[in-house]
Image (cartoon, rainbow over all chains, first blue to last red; front, side, top):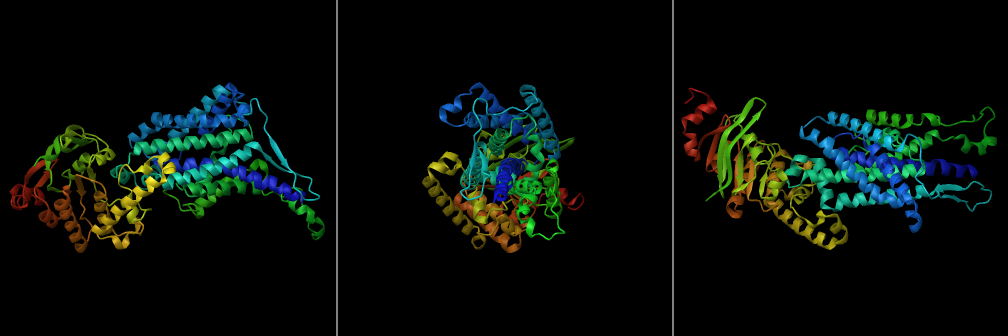
Length: 334
Length: 256
C-alpha cells in the first residue's frame, strides 16, 4: 500500500499540478490564437511577469496575508492579474497592433512575439536577478501530510498549500470561462470574431474591444498560472519560459482555438510527463516474489529519465501533428 | 427625397493603380439604387469604402448628412448602414437561427455583470431576439434549415441568410454585394421578392452591386454606371441600356 501512496503523490498529484499549469497557460495561448491568428510565444513570459508582480507586491507588503489568514502571494494575485492584463494590452498596443494595421502575415506576428519574449525576460531579469526566490516572503509554505487510515500505510499523501489553490483556481477559471463564452454577449462576440472577423465587424461587433478583452483574459490567466507555479516551486525569471513547449503542445493537442480542448490537452501532456518519468519499479516491487525467476526487475523502470522530461511533450506534439493535426477536439474556432 | 448616402469626390489608389477617381454618387432615401460597370470599374472598392472596410485616400462620405468618412464597419452598423458580402459570410459553427441572433446590438447579455447577476433580463431579451430571428427566418424562407449549422447551408441559402442578417436590426441602408451571384433561378426569385418587400413595406434603402442584368432591370431605379473609377452615366435602366457609351464600355468599341 505504501507504494500506492507513492503513486498517488508522484503521479496523481504531480500530474494534476503540472496539468493545471499547462491547462491555464494553454487556454491563454489558444484564445489569443483564435482571435488574432498567431502563436503568441511571449505568453510564458507574461506568466513570469505575473509571478514577478506578486513577488514585488509581497515584498512590499509582507504582512498582508497574515491579516487575512492566507498566503500573501494569494492576496496579491488579483492585483498582479490586473497588472499583467494591463501589460498584455500595452504590449498589444505597442507591438502587435501596428503590425496588424499593416496587415502582416501571421509569421511576422510570431517573430514579433519572440522579440517581446526576449525583451520581457531581459527586463524581469534586470530587476529580479537570475537566481530563484521564494514567493513566500514572510510566511511559510504549508505542507499537508495526510496519513491514510489504512493499517500498514506509513507514507502520507503529501499536498502543498499552493497546489490546493491551484486546483481551486483552475476549476474557477474553467467554469468562469465557460460561462463567459457561452452566456455573455461579449463571449459570443469573441466566438463570432474567431469564426469570421469581417462578418463580426459587419454585424456591429467592435473587434478592437474583442482584441483587448482577449488580452485581458490571457494576461489574467497567465498571472494565475505563473504565480501558482512559482509558489509551488520558486520564482525564477526563466521558469515559465521552459514551459513554453509543453504549453503549446497542450494547446495543439486540444485543437488550437478550442479553450476546453486546451484544458484537456494540458492534463494529457501533464499526466503523460509524470507517467513517463515515474519509476514503475516501485509499483511492481511488491509482486517481486510472484514474478518468474528469469525476470529481474531493474532498479529504474521509468520510460524516460527525469532529465529528459521535455522529450515527452515534444513527442506528443510531433505525434499529434502527424496523425491528427487538428487536435483531439478538431479546433479552429472557439 | 434626400440623399441618404452622399459620396463626394472620393479617390483611392492601390500602389500606383488609381481605382477610384474623383467619384461622386448619391443614393436617395427609399430607393433601390443599382451600381453596375465592367470588371475593374471599381464597384467593389467603392462599396468597401462606403461600408468602412477600406480607408479612402481623399474625399468625403455622408450618411444622412453625417460625416462617416473612414469610420469602421462596426460603427456604421450602429448608425444603420449594413452590408452583405460578395462571397457569403457566415458564422459556420453556429446554426442559421443563431447566426441571425448574433446581430442585434446592445443586448443586456453584453455586460459580464448583467449576465451573472440579472439573468432574467438577459433571458427575456434573448427570447425577444429569438422571436425576431424566427420571424426573419420565416420571411426569408429558411425555416426548414434553421437548426442546421450555417457552414452546411448551400451557397444560395447563405445569401438568403446574409439578407436576413440585415433585417435583424433597424437598418436604414443596406449595401448588397452581388447577392445574386451563385444563386439558382428559383431562389433568386425569392431573393428579389424579399428585397422588394423590404424596400416597400419596411422602407429599407438599398445600394446594389450586380452583374445579373435581369435583376438590375427588375429591382433598380436609378442605375449608376461606373467605369474606370468614376461615374459614367446615371439614369433609369432604359436610359442606361440605350446609352451608346455604356454599350461601348461593356462590349468594346465598335459594338454599337
